[in-house]
Image (cartoon, rainbow, N blue to C red; front, side, top):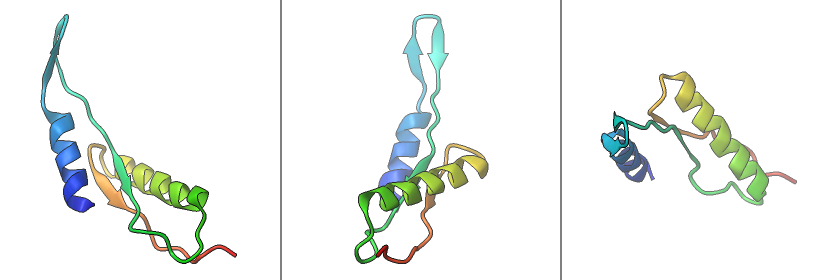
Length: 73
């Protein structure tokens, strides 16, 4: 997953032409490694979202791995 995120960042950094000039895009990626036990899809997405915002706050155009969390009951 980390290699894939790094490749996404590389692709997004490449300049592209549009009317009006050359532009660049930036992305921030939040990764989750599997689910812990019976964790719901919403909980997994929340973890990925939190990781994405950590990546943004670290300087944008980065990826971050979600923290582990306990399985939901």
